Image (tube, rainbow, N blue to C red; front, side, top):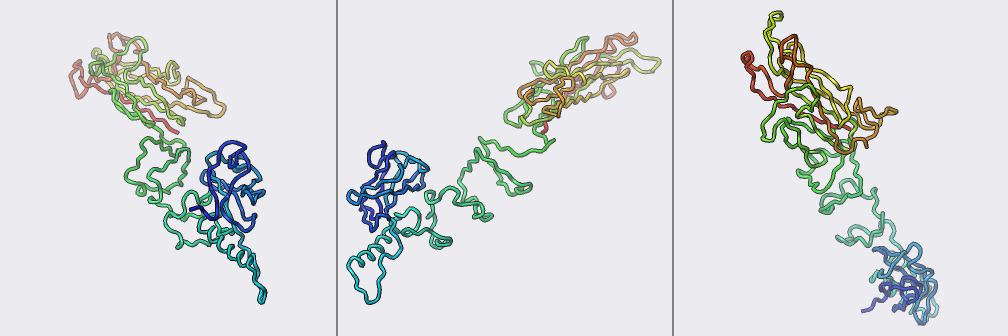
Length: 424
């Protein structure tokens, strides 16, 4: 059954044929009307009706001519979009009946047809502006009791038709949200303390997503730490780092003896990429330093000679941080842990320029991929006051422990530890 208040079809292609997207002639329409001024035209673009003014109506062919083609101006329609020629009968009285006057058939017909046409338009939703006939909806004209679930769907809502001040706090709950909330390309800002741990679901599934929370200056962005045994440590950005190790290929811990040349301290070599917004990278290495052997009895000091002296350098790749140099040991040294810490600065600090001697980098781009931090060590010498082999040091193993006898070397392996902390 044909619609009694509008004619609807899809736009065609081309610029000359009737009902084509690039021209202005549309029809023929099939509905009856009272005045040609009641005949309107609209095209639905992406679910929203766009209106074009009707310039003229051919009452014989029932072809209308538009003031502009639907593809021009703000309409921006394309082939396959829906167009509608419709009737919006005026609600102004067409006939004013007077007492004692003669009633003509034409007046009765017009009055009847006006009511009939308006009823048809309401029933068929021909008036795309939303009113019955030509009037639009005013504030509170549609009450909640007259609306059923899902009666207002996407095509009935224009952009920005629901604003924030129309939504009460708590009005949109979990049931009103889609099962997947896609916030790609969006920013979510939460006030301090607005969501507590108790208000979060017991399981927050962010698989395949990245959740970025605001950070403050000095806040820890990543902490990599452990004993230097080759174990794995999780990265803050995903994946793992492998900690350095003092073990050999067979899994046995190896004691390192110092020599006359600087060599890498085993367990201290670590390649690291800091988080993008890190401004400080702290390197901390703790290791045991002990004598290689104990010398002869020193009658003057009434103790065994055990002088140990080792020198250390610190590097970032091949650049030595010269201000981090240090020596460790004493004239009578029986072993102890050495704790070394250095903090790199990454990012602008006013007019200060990059300085490898302090580990300062003016630009974050100077450390945005793997760079290697490490200590190097050499012994001071092989003799001390004539006692052969008394100054050389060894790392990662005690010499004396728990009152073991003179020149009876302890067997304790002491693993070094490594801690890397990146802060905002």
